[in-house]
Length: 329
Figure 1 (tube, rainbow, N blue to C red):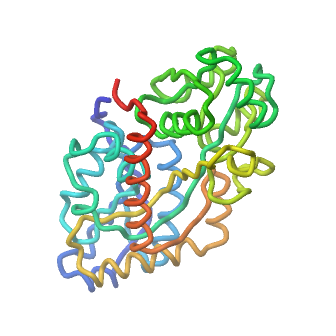
Figure 2: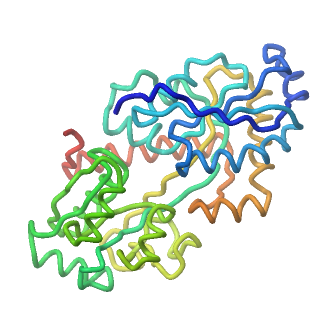
Figure 3: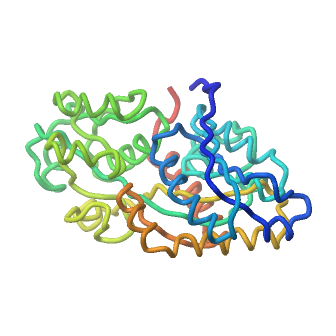
């Protein structure tokens, strides 16, 4: 995917006098950059823009810039942060795809090491995926869909936003666990998949609630289960987890959003940023706005974020190997 040359910069009021005093190398008149690896208007960008004012308040006031560095699946943006000065003024709003699934799909191919070159600050939010089926599919429950697909080996397909993406990996793992024998049809983004779902040319898709919501409301698709860790999720009321709905072995896979700094950030600065992150996320109004975006606030510290990234990466490495999931074009 080509890197877009234009960067969207949105200036928010945000000063860091106390933080700057703690960091002699971070002048008080310099803004803090929240680097977003996806375009303006997307879920990650919207989440970052909601988070920034509360983060500002928690840190004490001044200037922050939302810096959209798009393209390459978020890898160039992450590499930019990994190579930035560790002064606490350049932070990455990362998704699990950058530090977990991309390294699993392309081991050794990234220009940075997510464990060595990025310092976790805190987890922001999580979002499960939904198993969606076209309205034309007769199945109304997960067991019915599994039985319907098993009765048509090679005749049922699922779409994705591309080979090796989260929608692909989740659906491929579901297919392996359920034994449905579905065919993968990759697209460039989920938008074209929904068009095919409406026509009935694609039967299934795994996607996050925020993107699926308008299609669910329009009746173009139905949700048969979610990949969250709990039986129910406020992001999809009335939709059971895949495990609760009857998937053998269950399938837990949550897209998470987390804050990272360049490695080498001094401990006092890292601690201050982590504390400010937790304080910002404790705001009930922010929690409600995150839910409206399709993300559930989960304020956990740097150790939990680092562990989550490593464990998820290892799960996908093992799943790709065990179930022979094809992750190359």
